[in-house]
Image (cartoon, rainbow, N blue to C red; front, side):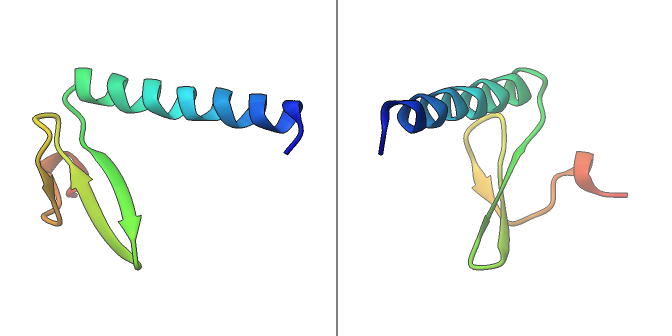
Length: 57
């Protein structure tokens, strides 16, 4: 990897961490996918597959 690629990855990782932190501060769960299954990380740190109320219709 060249230095530009490394810098782009570094900036991207920071942006993701900042967005995750902002979601938690607003009380919104972060959503992740692994093996085509959804996982929700709640603001208290709990990880669950139960859909949080803010994502339900």
